[in-house]
Length: 420
Image 1 (spheres, rainbow, N blue to C red):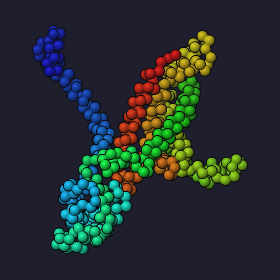
Image 2: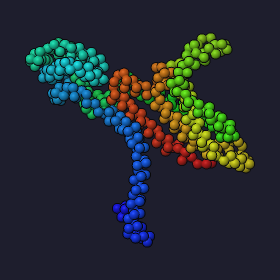
Image 3: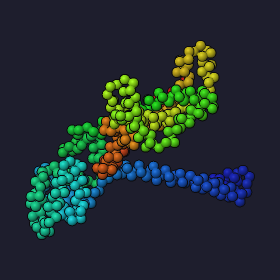
Image 4: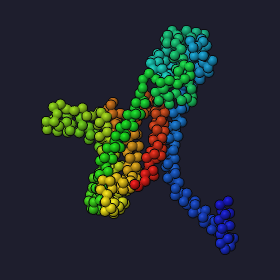
């Protein structure tokens, strides 16, 4: 259709049919070349951005592990009403499946899945699997329920079977509920958990990211203003110091703060030498150490956007405002500050979004008190092997950032600010 339209336009311009077809082929070749130039970037975006996010969103609601390990037991327990102990047929089938898993050395995987919904049951599953490994198949087929109860009396409680049923759901929103400190009650209603963990971490992460953003703004705005109104040689000289952190490894910059803030570090030694304090201050492995280290690391991300915008602001605007009787501070607030808002907005968004997902610095200098939600996500991926909960936490963090960005752009964005 597009080639036909181009051929018609070429014919209407006075070109012959052959020239019109040549023009259409040339346009098509240009489009193909343009697409081939963009194709590597599109492939990189897909494999490095779109695919991981899609995988995370899918993994947060998909967990077929238990369903693949004990499918027959889960099929048999479907008729159970959730009250009391399941019938003996269910117990017998589970005993048979558990022996098979013990022989395949996969009973530990089932133990981990059940333990996520009922903490403390991992040892029950593993010890029962070891006990049933020595049982004969004929004995299990006729008296598997009794052997299961003899191995551990916890199998007579309905709670562990409800946990098995929950773990056997291939698609479930339970990990999102856990990430929001919620749970599904026996009546099917959503209720709060007794312990609030993740919501507090989300709140602390956002609060620390906001403080870091404000500190970088307080430190970076005057510096960018001075650089923008200095000579080119001085601005370039100062820019070297702004970019200097990028020439040093992030790990080196973070560990240097450990040497500065530790109990016998440079800061405490200096304060005690000056007589300002008698005992060392506890600065390392706190929220303070995380905030101060991340402020230092993320400061260039605030200065660079501000400087690029301020450099293009004509100084004559301020001179014109003051020549008309305005004082410096009101002229700055009504003229210069709104004109610098694009750089301020870009810097604030960069610092805030990066700091919300930061991992290395809080892990090294934050300790327990200075940890952020990214550290808990890494914990579930690397130590507890609860990838589904980690994916749910990461997905909620993604949704939260998108919502905050929308609110910012809707109510506080630079497009909503008008010159006074």
